[in-house]
Image 1 (spheres, rainbow, N blue to C red):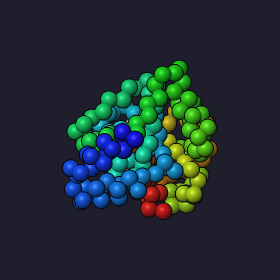
Image 2 (image 1 turned 90 degrees about the horizontal axis):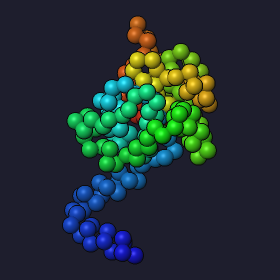
Image 3 (image 1 turned 30 degrees about the vertical axis):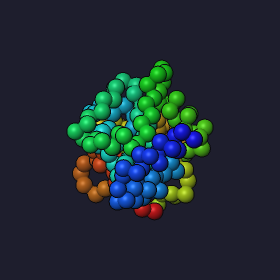
Image 4 (image 1 turned 120 degrees about the vertical axis):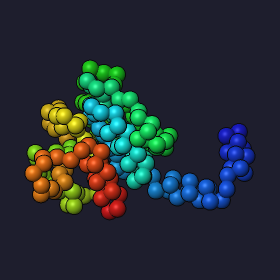
Length: 181
């Protein structure tokens, strides 16, 4: 009851425009789609993924820290970390398997992004399935454990000579395309 009174009091100081913007943003949030990044090497890439999660309405970002510890880069995230739930998986011996297990227990299908297994192109992905999109690090991609424990594989069709996209670009393309559908 006290929380509701406090909220009503504070909302008296917020303009209608801001209230409407907050309502639109909150109404557009989803937990049907989640993002996982595994062992990101460069903090600015994971910070860019956080920013994209906010922009596309993805509420939960899971960060797996096995070898690499994540450090927020505020110059890249631009405050988006305040609006996205960042769940760090760094307490165990095998944080990849722990994260995957936790999400599967919550009903998520784990979908690994990889240019090496061309099971499902992005445009054919079934968005009706509650999914967590798993992205690997910049140097090695996904670990073998992540690939072996995924429920499916997603690829972004490319025609150039380069094997893969940057992790933050891959995340943004996937989020944009999947949230539109």
